[in-house]
Image (cartoon, rainbow, N blue to C red):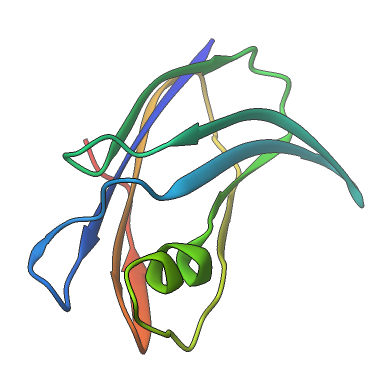
Length: 109
């Protein structure tokens, strides 16, 4: 079993990005199957996702452009898709640090 969580921080404002749409999908070759859709809570978090470990790559997609537009701003990257291939079962935390002109991620804890 693989469990997942995410945390989105808006570096422009220096606070969590609450209300951002996030999807989790499984990638099998060129096929992408959406497994979950959620919206970050007031603290910018999504928790409680779990999937069977099928050896496939996963994709977390953040709707950054829509979120910035809802907050009266524009951004360079309208969507951030993070593909990752979990090497084993366990917990994976996929944080996103975002600003209007860039983003970064890493494996969190």
